[in-house]
Image 1 (tube, each protein chain N blue to C red):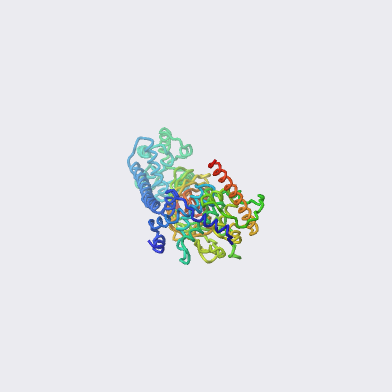
Image 2 (cartoon, chains in turn purple, orange; image 1 turned 90 degrees about the vertical axis):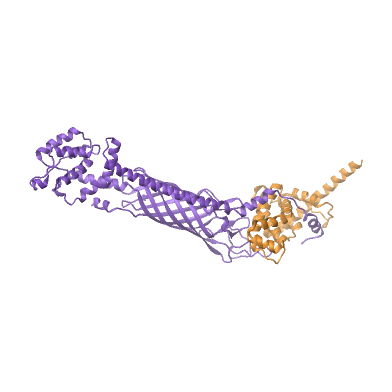
Length: 443
Length: 187
């Protein structure tokens, strides 16, 4: 209640005014109309992401073509030989050993070809297995010149061609002399022998090599927690709906404080592509859809004693509301395998991602107003995240990973205060391009 | 442009209308913010935050009252939140240890003009400054102030009494100094 003194003071003071600097309005305007700038960024990044994807696949296709061309032309350089070998390994050798219909196995250590052409092919394959540093054609020619390989059709199965390469396979260091000695030896026996263990080992090795080449597509699905708060560091994680702020629901007539953080959950699904860099490292990218939601406790401030009730927007008249948003995520990550030779491989992951957010409504925290309100224009459409994680790649290439992601651009920004997205995610990756070749080899 | 039309355009997000509304009220609101703070920069910060809230919550304004009064309430609340958030103001909010003798004259005469009064109000310790502004200038009663500041009503009452005493003392000293200056000038 005002006395005479207070009324005098009010009369004297109330009319006092000061001219604000122009910057104040500029800042207010920038806060109220931030979308134009971000829309430009949004549309700018979409084609950029597309270009990156196109360049990646063109580069990938070029590599395949180059490898194919190299395989058809014999080159004298060691590098090209290596490419040839790899190509042969990939396409023919391991697979054909198990698949040639006309090749029959007699006992465990004998491989017989029915005709000369198949023998030559088989020899080529054997040479690749036994002598990765030598030209297949040279060896097979030498063998054929010396009549090491007999033509079964001519001999009408009267003899079996056996090439004994046990020593060379085991030593894995072969020179021409050794081959010639073997040829002589073989010529006498007129047999082609390949130790059964070698076949197994080679097949197993080939299988391993192919399996370890994780240039592979995956279907990914997962779920986890979601936190939006004004801490840029990784903190304040809690289970969904664990934190209700400091809302006094039992006595809505009293003032209360609505505080951070807001916690919730996310669900995700998408595709992922992994490319092997080395046995220990691989790179992955993909396209993922995210559904974000949290249950936000809002309360209902009805403090009418001061006539304040209407001055700010209450998010809802009930005590809770569901925030939800959709997002498309393009991740880029590097994986490091701790034990790449094991069947079940553990790996560590680090990466970044571009996050395109689509939110119809999302409650924004306003600490000044002690409340929440909707304002989609303040939500950032394009966000960048960084994440780390750990995972396991099972023997069948299925993978499971747990990762922690932190937005390093804000989820939304009000009053010069930035609010970041933080999430813990558990995801499963199901391989979708496991070839039938591998299965046969494994058998 | 009429107020209602201006409001409608602001609600549609038209920049020109928002700027016009800002231009109408900014100077008076900065004067208000200035009374609650110790520096001009802080007052401008509050003004900026306050107007952002005004525009964001404009759809909540009901035409049953004056727009200026509604904006004023938002500014006062923004100022209080700002003061609570900044430690340099918060430190001075608890002032029970300051002892002053209440003056006997309940309705003393105010001889100073608005500008001089504001300078003196701003010299009060921050807690007193806020309570004095809320009670004496904004016209809130002690219960309302207690709820707004989340304080005990008796504490508000006693602090207002002390703030008033301190201000009156400062006013007397100001008068005395002015008289001396005037007297010295005549000599």
